[in-house]
Every structure is written in C-alpha cells, then in structure tokens.
Image (cartoon, rainbow, N blue to C red; front, side):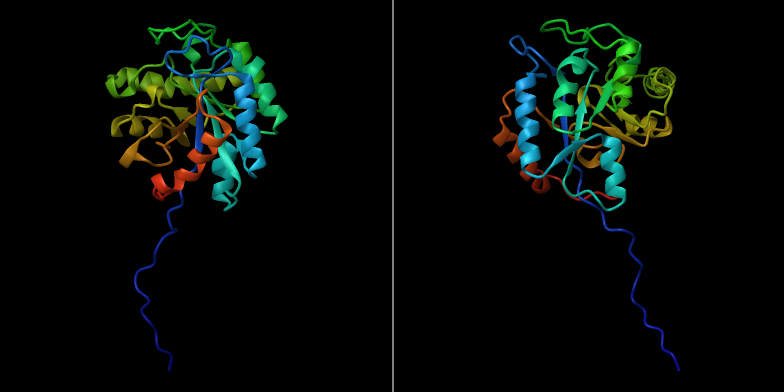
Length: 251
C-alpha cells in the first residue's frame, strides 16, 4: 500500500537578487556639470576596464534580463545611458566597443535633435537626432524610451501619462523599426500609478533609481555613476549592492 506524504504547499521560484545596473548620462566635457551627469571618456574607459578586470561585463538591459531568465546572470551587469545625448555616439560607443560591452540607451522621441531643456542649470547639451538614434541601434545598442519629453510621471494627468508611456513607445518603435521593450522613468521618480501605466503600455521592464518597495521588473533600481567614481569606488558600489537590495519576486 502506498502512502502519500504531505510535503506542504508548493513554493514558486525563489526570488532572485536584484540586478546591478549602472546609470550613466552624458559622456564628454564635465567642467560645467552642476547635476553631476557627465563622465569623461577617459573616466568611462577606466571604469569599464576595472569591471572587465574583475570578471564583469557590461551589457544591455535586454541581454541582462534574458541571461537571468536562463539562470546565466553571473558576471553580467547592466549599463544604461539616460536622455540620449548626442555625445553617446562619439564618446561612449567607442569605449563600449573597446571593452566588448553592450548598453541600453534611453531616449526621448519627442525631443529629437533638441537639448536638455528640462535642466534649468548648466550648459545646453544636444540630444540625438532620429538618424543618430538609428545609428546607435544599428551599432547593437538597445534603444529604450525615456518618455516622450522628460516629464515627472508622478505629476502627470492620465492623458499625459498615456502619451509619455504608450505613445512614446509607438513613436520610437516606428523610428527604429523594432520593438521597444524598456522604459526609464524621467528623474527616477516613480509611484504605483506610473508603474501600472508602463506595464499597461507593453514594456517588458522599466528602470528607476531607488524605487524602494515598488522594486520589480517594472521598477528596477540603478546605481548612479559619475566622474568622481574612480574604478575602486565603482567596484565598492558593486560589492555593496547585495547588502542593500533584497531579492525580489520576478527577478
């Protein structure tokens, strides 16, 4: 006679550690940089070189999340560049290629060829044109949406929230003739309503800065990386990540 043994409730997959993702912006001259959003090409080269020597490789968010889904996350970190500055092509892309790294570039399809008008201080920095974004995509860079025009989604009404999420995805998909799976919250600000809108718009994932209890595939935390982050500081930020971020379901 066989005896069945009650082993208790079946548990789903264990939550995984939150991925380590670096947040960059502009790569170029940082002599006038009140928001600390710029790193020089030399500093980026030093930072990526140290990661590589530590056995880590920077990849796009799409590659990072796909590898994690296969259980192959070891040795990979995410590299993201916000706002879509024009200097990405001339200054960031050659450094990424030198170190065999990938990246995700979050752009603003409503400000093509414009500048960082949302920043009241500091120099005007030109943004990529439509052709520049296509060139980045053709070079193998993942293109994601940073919203249409860079507005704080937590302060947007329903119509603006839809425009900045769903419409920006449609415009950008048409521009690069490919699906757009990633979103990045302008200013890093996020609330449950913004997360719901991004999910409803069809994005696979979204990046924030420090989303706290909202942390999920549609509100991923990132680590700001600036000019003052030497190779050693960047390594320490990576090492401390597991201590600060608890495992989250779906990751």
